[in-house]
Length: 349
Image (cartoon, rainbow, N blue to C red; front, side, top):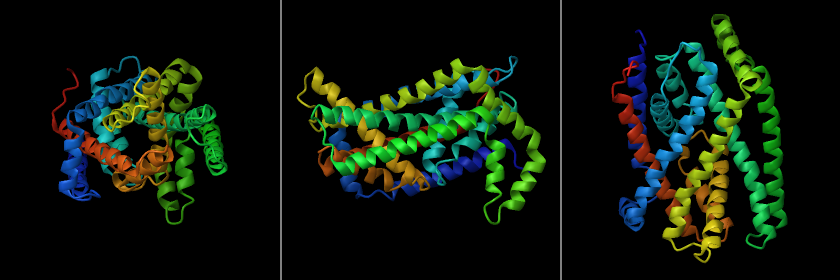
Protein backbone atom coordinates (compact mmCIF):
# COMPACT_ATOMS: atom_id res chain seq x y z
CA UNK A 1 0.00 0.00 0.00
CA UNK A 2 1.44 3.35 -1.04
CA UNK A 3 1.37 5.91 1.75
CA UNK A 4 0.43 9.17 0.03
CA UNK A 5 0.37 12.46 1.91
CA UNK A 6 -3.43 12.45 1.77
CA UNK A 7 -3.59 8.95 3.25
CA UNK A 8 -1.28 9.96 6.08
CA UNK A 9 -3.47 13.03 6.63
CA UNK A 10 -6.49 10.74 6.95
CA UNK A 11 -4.68 8.51 9.46
CA UNK A 12 -3.82 11.50 11.65
CA UNK A 13 -7.41 12.76 11.35
CA UNK A 14 -8.92 9.43 12.41
CA UNK A 15 -6.45 9.16 15.29
CA UNK A 16 -7.43 12.64 16.45
CA UNK A 17 -11.16 11.88 16.28
CA UNK A 18 -10.71 8.64 18.23
CA UNK A 19 -8.74 10.42 20.95
CA UNK A 20 -11.35 13.19 21.24
CA UNK A 21 -14.01 10.53 21.84
CA UNK A 22 -11.78 8.87 24.44
CA UNK A 23 -11.20 12.19 26.18
CA UNK A 24 -14.92 12.97 26.25
CA UNK A 25 -15.55 9.77 28.19
CA UNK A 26 -12.54 9.97 30.51
CA UNK A 27 -13.32 13.17 32.39
CA UNK A 28 -12.75 12.81 36.12
CA UNK A 29 -16.25 14.21 36.75
CA UNK A 30 -19.72 13.19 35.60
CA UNK A 31 -21.36 15.00 32.71
CA UNK A 32 -23.74 16.62 35.21
CA UNK A 33 -20.79 18.03 37.16
CA UNK A 34 -19.09 19.02 33.91
CA UNK A 35 -22.19 20.93 32.84
CA UNK A 36 -22.30 22.67 36.24
CA UNK A 37 -18.68 23.79 35.79
CA UNK A 38 -19.42 25.07 32.29
CA UNK A 39 -22.45 26.99 33.55
CA UNK A 40 -20.29 28.44 36.32
CA UNK A 41 -17.77 29.61 33.72
CA UNK A 42 -20.55 31.22 31.69
CA UNK A 43 -19.44 33.98 29.32
CA UNK A 44 -15.90 33.75 30.74
CA UNK A 45 -15.53 30.65 28.57
CA UNK A 46 -15.34 32.92 25.50
CA UNK A 47 -12.14 34.79 26.51
CA UNK A 48 -10.68 31.56 27.94
CA UNK A 49 -11.07 29.83 24.57
CA UNK A 50 -10.57 32.98 22.48
CA UNK A 51 -7.21 33.96 23.98
CA UNK A 52 -5.73 30.93 22.23
CA UNK A 53 -6.27 32.66 18.90
CA UNK A 54 -3.57 35.05 20.09
CA UNK A 55 -1.41 32.34 21.67
CA UNK A 56 -1.38 30.21 18.53
CA UNK A 57 -0.68 33.35 16.51
CA UNK A 58 2.43 34.00 18.63
CA UNK A 59 3.48 30.34 18.27
CA UNK A 60 3.01 30.57 14.51
CA UNK A 61 5.06 33.77 14.37
CA UNK A 62 7.88 32.04 16.27
CA UNK A 63 7.82 29.09 13.86
CA UNK A 64 7.59 31.43 10.85
CA UNK A 65 10.82 33.15 12.01
CA UNK A 66 12.52 29.75 11.94
CA UNK A 67 11.10 28.84 8.53
CA UNK A 68 12.20 32.11 6.93
CA UNK A 69 15.77 31.60 8.18
CA UNK A 70 16.07 27.99 6.91
CA UNK A 71 14.23 27.97 3.57
CA UNK A 72 15.70 28.83 0.18
CA UNK A 73 14.98 32.34 -1.22
CA UNK A 74 12.79 30.92 -4.00
CA UNK A 75 10.58 28.98 -1.56
CA UNK A 76 7.48 30.65 -0.19
CA UNK A 77 5.12 29.90 2.66
CA UNK A 78 2.61 32.41 4.00
CA UNK A 79 2.08 33.26 7.65
CA UNK A 80 -1.54 32.09 7.48
CA UNK A 81 -0.37 28.71 6.20
CA UNK A 82 2.00 28.44 9.16
CA UNK A 83 -0.77 29.61 11.51
CA UNK A 84 -3.07 26.88 10.24
CA UNK A 85 -0.40 24.17 10.61
CA UNK A 86 0.38 25.47 14.11
CA UNK A 87 -3.22 24.89 15.21
CA UNK A 88 -3.53 21.46 13.57
CA UNK A 89 -0.10 20.40 14.83
CA UNK A 90 -0.91 21.28 18.43
CA UNK A 91 -4.31 19.60 18.10
CA UNK A 92 -2.52 16.34 17.23
CA UNK A 93 0.07 16.89 19.96
CA UNK A 94 -2.70 17.24 22.53
CA UNK A 95 -4.50 14.13 21.26
CA UNK A 96 -1.64 11.69 20.70
CA UNK A 97 0.47 9.79 23.25
CA UNK A 98 4.28 9.36 23.45
CA UNK A 99 4.97 12.87 24.71
CA UNK A 100 2.65 14.59 22.26
CA UNK A 101 4.73 14.01 19.14
CA UNK A 102 1.90 13.39 16.69
CA UNK A 103 1.91 16.94 15.36
CA UNK A 104 5.53 17.08 14.22
CA UNK A 105 5.38 14.39 11.47
CA UNK A 106 2.11 15.93 10.26
CA UNK A 107 3.69 19.40 10.08
CA UNK A 108 6.66 18.09 8.10
CA UNK A 109 4.41 16.31 5.60
CA UNK A 110 2.13 19.31 5.12
CA UNK A 111 4.88 21.95 5.04
CA UNK A 112 6.78 19.96 2.42
CA UNK A 113 3.97 20.94 0.02
CA UNK A 114 5.41 24.47 0.18
CA UNK A 115 9.14 23.99 0.68
CA UNK A 116 11.63 21.15 0.29
CA UNK A 117 11.30 18.19 2.62
CA UNK A 118 14.74 18.83 4.15
CA UNK A 119 13.83 22.44 4.95
CA UNK A 120 10.41 21.40 6.23
CA UNK A 121 11.97 18.79 8.53
CA UNK A 122 14.67 21.14 9.83
CA UNK A 123 12.20 23.97 10.53
CA UNK A 124 9.81 21.63 12.38
CA UNK A 125 12.65 20.13 14.45
CA UNK A 126 14.07 23.59 15.15
CA UNK A 127 10.70 24.92 16.23
CA UNK A 128 10.08 21.86 18.44
CA UNK A 129 13.49 22.49 20.04
CA UNK A 130 12.64 26.16 20.50
CA UNK A 131 9.28 25.28 22.03
CA UNK A 132 10.95 23.03 24.60
CA UNK A 133 13.85 25.47 25.12
CA UNK A 134 11.37 28.25 25.91
CA UNK A 135 9.64 25.93 28.40
CA UNK A 136 12.85 25.63 30.37
CA UNK A 137 13.33 29.41 30.32
CA UNK A 138 9.73 29.82 31.51
CA UNK A 139 10.31 27.44 34.43
CA UNK A 140 13.72 28.98 35.20
CA UNK A 141 12.45 32.57 35.36
CA UNK A 142 9.32 31.48 37.27
CA UNK A 143 11.54 30.18 40.09
CA UNK A 144 12.96 33.67 40.59
CA UNK A 145 9.47 35.16 40.28
CA UNK A 146 8.35 32.87 43.12
CA UNK A 147 11.37 33.86 45.24
CA UNK A 148 10.68 37.57 44.60
CA UNK A 149 7.05 37.20 45.70
CA UNK A 150 8.19 35.21 48.73
CA UNK A 151 10.64 37.93 49.74
CA UNK A 152 7.84 40.52 49.81
CA UNK A 153 5.77 38.20 52.00
CA UNK A 154 3.23 37.16 49.39
CA UNK A 155 4.18 33.47 49.17
CA UNK A 156 5.72 30.97 51.61
CA UNK A 157 9.37 29.94 51.27
CA UNK A 158 10.12 26.91 53.39
CA UNK A 159 13.16 24.61 53.26
CA UNK A 160 11.33 21.91 51.21
CA UNK A 161 10.10 24.56 48.75
CA UNK A 162 13.61 25.99 48.52
CA UNK A 163 15.03 22.53 47.75
CA UNK A 164 12.44 21.96 45.02
CA UNK A 165 13.13 25.37 43.48
CA UNK A 166 16.88 24.65 43.60
CA UNK A 167 16.38 21.34 41.80
CA UNK A 168 14.32 23.07 39.10
CA UNK A 169 17.09 25.66 38.60
CA UNK A 170 19.71 22.90 38.37
CA UNK A 171 17.71 20.92 35.81
CA UNK A 172 17.10 24.06 33.74
CA UNK A 173 20.81 24.95 33.74
CA UNK A 174 21.64 21.42 32.56
CA UNK A 175 19.01 21.74 29.84
CA UNK A 176 20.48 25.08 28.71
CA UNK A 177 23.88 23.42 28.37
CA UNK A 178 22.52 20.48 26.35
CA UNK A 179 20.47 22.74 24.09
CA UNK A 180 23.48 24.99 23.46
CA UNK A 181 25.45 21.96 22.27
CA UNK A 182 22.55 20.85 20.10
CA UNK A 183 22.16 24.28 18.53
CA UNK A 184 25.89 24.57 17.84
CA UNK A 185 26.44 21.12 16.32
CA UNK A 186 23.02 19.78 15.38
CA UNK A 187 21.56 16.76 17.10
CA UNK A 188 19.54 14.68 14.63
CA UNK A 189 22.30 12.25 13.59
CA UNK A 190 23.48 11.90 17.20
CA UNK A 191 19.92 11.25 18.36
CA UNK A 192 19.41 8.47 15.80
CA UNK A 193 22.72 6.91 16.85
CA UNK A 194 21.68 7.18 20.51
CA UNK A 195 18.39 5.43 19.72
CA UNK A 196 20.48 2.62 18.22
CA UNK A 197 21.89 1.93 21.69
CA UNK A 198 18.43 0.95 22.93
CA UNK A 199 18.10 -2.85 22.90
CA UNK A 200 16.28 -4.02 19.77
CA UNK A 201 16.64 -0.74 17.86
CA UNK A 202 20.26 -0.96 16.71
CA UNK A 203 19.31 -2.52 13.36
CA UNK A 204 16.63 0.09 12.66
CA UNK A 205 19.01 2.91 13.59
CA UNK A 206 21.76 1.64 11.29
CA UNK A 207 19.36 1.13 8.36
CA UNK A 208 17.80 4.57 8.85
CA UNK A 209 21.21 6.25 8.92
CA UNK A 210 22.33 4.38 5.80
CA UNK A 211 19.29 5.53 3.83
CA UNK A 212 19.05 9.10 5.12
CA UNK A 213 22.54 10.14 6.21
CA UNK A 214 22.87 12.99 3.70
CA UNK A 215 19.42 14.40 4.45
CA UNK A 216 19.98 14.17 8.20
CA UNK A 217 23.34 15.95 7.89
CA UNK A 218 21.62 18.75 5.95
CA UNK A 219 19.05 19.08 8.73
CA UNK A 220 21.82 19.22 11.35
CA UNK A 221 23.64 21.87 9.29
CA UNK A 222 20.48 23.99 9.15
CA UNK A 223 19.97 23.60 12.92
CA UNK A 224 23.51 24.85 13.53
CA UNK A 225 23.06 27.62 10.97
CA UNK A 226 20.08 29.14 12.79
CA UNK A 227 22.13 29.79 15.92
CA UNK A 228 25.37 30.76 14.14
CA UNK A 229 24.23 32.92 11.23
CA UNK A 230 20.61 33.81 11.99
CA UNK A 231 20.88 34.96 15.59
CA UNK A 232 18.14 37.55 15.22
CA UNK A 233 15.65 34.93 14.04
CA UNK A 234 16.82 32.60 16.82
CA UNK A 235 16.28 35.07 19.64
CA UNK A 236 13.11 36.49 18.11
CA UNK A 237 11.62 33.00 18.00
CA UNK A 238 12.75 32.28 21.57
CA UNK A 239 11.27 35.51 22.95
CA UNK A 240 7.99 34.90 21.12
CA UNK A 241 7.73 31.35 22.46
CA UNK A 242 8.41 32.58 25.98
CA UNK A 243 5.88 35.40 25.62
CA UNK A 244 3.24 32.93 24.43
CA UNK A 245 3.41 31.25 27.84
CA UNK A 246 2.95 34.58 29.59
CA UNK A 247 -0.15 35.20 27.46
CA UNK A 248 -1.31 31.63 28.13
CA UNK A 249 -1.42 32.50 31.84
CA UNK A 250 -4.32 34.84 31.11
CA UNK A 251 -6.76 31.92 30.88
CA UNK A 252 -5.94 30.99 34.48
CA UNK A 253 -6.12 34.68 35.38
CA UNK A 254 -9.67 34.84 33.98
CA UNK A 255 -10.69 31.82 36.05
CA UNK A 256 -9.18 33.26 39.24
CA UNK A 257 -11.19 36.45 38.68
CA UNK A 258 -14.27 34.31 38.10
CA UNK A 259 -13.79 32.84 41.59
CA UNK A 260 -13.23 36.28 43.11
CA UNK A 261 -9.48 35.78 43.57
CA UNK A 262 -8.09 39.21 42.73
CA UNK A 263 -5.75 40.10 45.66
CA UNK A 264 -7.81 43.15 46.54
CA UNK A 265 -9.04 44.10 43.09
CA UNK A 266 -6.97 47.24 42.58
CA UNK A 267 -4.24 47.57 39.95
CA UNK A 268 -1.58 46.11 42.25
CA UNK A 269 -3.90 43.25 43.19
CA UNK A 270 -4.65 42.39 39.57
CA UNK A 271 -0.95 42.42 38.67
CA UNK A 272 -0.24 40.15 41.63
CA UNK A 273 -3.05 37.82 40.55
CA UNK A 274 -1.59 37.63 37.05
CA UNK A 275 1.85 36.80 38.48
CA UNK A 276 0.19 34.01 40.46
CA UNK A 277 -1.37 32.79 37.21
CA UNK A 278 2.06 32.65 35.59
CA UNK A 279 3.36 30.53 38.47
CA UNK A 280 0.36 28.20 38.27
CA UNK A 281 0.92 27.64 34.55
CA UNK A 282 4.69 27.24 35.02
CA UNK A 283 4.50 24.59 37.73
CA UNK A 284 1.53 22.81 36.13
CA UNK A 285 3.30 22.49 32.78
CA UNK A 286 6.45 21.35 34.56
CA UNK A 287 4.49 18.60 36.31
CA UNK A 288 2.67 17.64 33.10
CA UNK A 289 5.88 17.43 31.08
CA UNK A 290 7.55 15.17 33.65
CA UNK A 291 4.91 12.57 32.77
CA UNK A 292 4.19 13.55 29.17
CA UNK A 293 3.59 10.16 27.55
CA UNK A 294 -0.16 10.11 28.21
CA UNK A 295 -2.59 11.55 25.63
CA UNK A 296 -3.42 15.07 26.76
CA UNK A 297 -1.52 14.09 29.96
CA UNK A 298 -4.81 12.64 31.18
CA UNK A 299 -5.00 13.02 34.95
CA UNK A 300 -1.52 14.57 35.14
CA UNK A 301 -2.54 18.07 34.10
CA UNK A 302 -5.49 17.98 36.48
CA UNK A 303 -3.23 16.96 39.36
CA UNK A 304 -0.72 19.62 38.36
CA UNK A 305 -3.31 22.38 38.53
CA UNK A 306 -4.62 21.21 41.92
CA UNK A 307 -1.09 20.99 43.39
CA UNK A 308 0.07 24.30 41.89
CA UNK A 309 -3.00 26.21 43.01
CA UNK A 310 -2.96 24.63 46.49
CA UNK A 311 0.73 25.58 46.83
CA UNK A 312 -0.29 29.22 46.45
CA UNK A 313 -2.75 28.88 49.31
CA UNK A 314 -5.89 28.60 47.15
CA UNK A 315 -8.59 25.94 47.40
CA UNK A 316 -8.35 22.52 45.75
CA UNK A 317 -11.87 23.08 44.38
CA UNK A 318 -10.53 26.01 42.36
CA UNK A 319 -7.76 23.75 41.03
CA UNK A 320 -10.29 21.18 39.89
CA UNK A 321 -12.39 23.86 38.20
CA UNK A 322 -9.39 25.34 36.38
CA UNK A 323 -8.23 21.91 35.20
CA UNK A 324 -11.68 20.95 33.88
CA UNK A 325 -12.23 24.22 32.00
CA UNK A 326 -8.72 23.97 30.51
CA UNK A 327 -9.53 20.41 29.40
CA UNK A 328 -12.72 21.64 27.73
CA UNK A 329 -10.73 24.39 26.00
CA UNK A 330 -8.23 21.82 24.73
CA UNK A 331 -11.00 19.63 23.30
CA UNK A 332 -12.57 22.63 21.56
CA UNK A 333 -9.23 23.54 19.92
CA UNK A 334 -8.53 19.90 19.01
CA UNK A 335 -11.85 19.82 17.16
CA UNK A 336 -10.99 23.11 15.42
CA UNK A 337 -7.59 21.67 14.43
CA UNK A 338 -9.17 18.48 13.06
CA UNK A 339 -11.66 20.51 11.02
CA UNK A 340 -8.79 22.55 9.55
CA UNK A 341 -7.09 19.28 8.54
CA UNK A 342 -10.00 18.44 6.25
CA UNK A 343 -10.43 21.89 4.69
CA UNK A 344 -8.61 21.77 1.32
CA UNK A 345 -5.49 23.91 1.04
CA UNK A 346 -4.24 25.33 -2.25
CA UNK A 347 -0.51 26.23 -2.06
CA UNK A 348 -0.79 28.95 -4.70
CA UNK A 349 -3.40 30.90 -2.71
